[in-house]
Length: 154
Length: 109
Image (cartoon, rainbow over the protein chains, first blue to last red):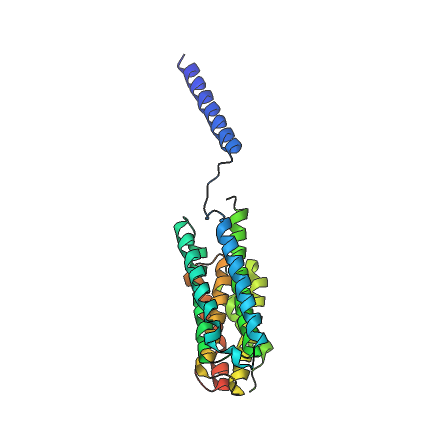
C-alpha cells in the first residue's frame, strides 16, 4: 500500500513538472540575465548618430571659413547634451542595463571632448577624420549592445 | 616622426592578447581590429602634433575619445566589465607608451 502511495506521489510530481515546463514554453517565459531590448533607446541613439554625422559633415564644409567657429555651432552641442541626458535617464531606469548605461556615459564624454576641441579651435579635415572614427566606433558598439538585448528575447 | 602603425598595432595586439587571455579565442577578430585602429589613431595624433597642427591639449582629447570608443567596443562585444575593459586598454597603451611618448615629445600616454 505504502509502495503504491509513493508511486502515485512520484507520478503526480512528474505531471506537475510537465505542466510547469509546458506552461513556461507556451507563455514564452524565460530567465532573463540581460536587460530587455528598448526600441525607444535604439531610435534615440540612431537619431543622435545621424545628428552627429550631419554636424561633422557641416564642419567639413566650413573648414577654413569664418563660419567654422564654435559659436556658430553651439546649438548642436546644447541639443546633443539634452538628447544624451534623456537617453541616459531612460537607460538607467531599465533593470540590468548597466552596460548600455555605462556606454552612454562614455558617449556623453566623447561629445563633451568634441565640444572642448571645437572651443579650442575650428577642426581641420584630419581632426574630423579622427573624430568621425571615434564616433562610428562608439555608436556601433552601443547599437550592437542593443541588438544583443533584442536577440536575448526582450 | 617615426611612429609606425603596423609595428605599434602588433605590440598593442600582443598586450591585448595577454590581458584578455581567457576570452582571446572569442575576441581575436575584434582585438585585431581595435589594435589596428588604436595604432592608427596614435600615429595620426603624433603626426598632427609633430607638424604643429594640434597642441598637447588637443592630442590628449583625441586620445581620450579613442580610449572611450575602445572601452565601449570591449564592453559590448567581449561582454567585459568596466574594470576588465580598463585593464585591457591600459595594458595595450603601456605596451607602446615609451615609443609613442618619445616620438611625440611629451607624455601623451
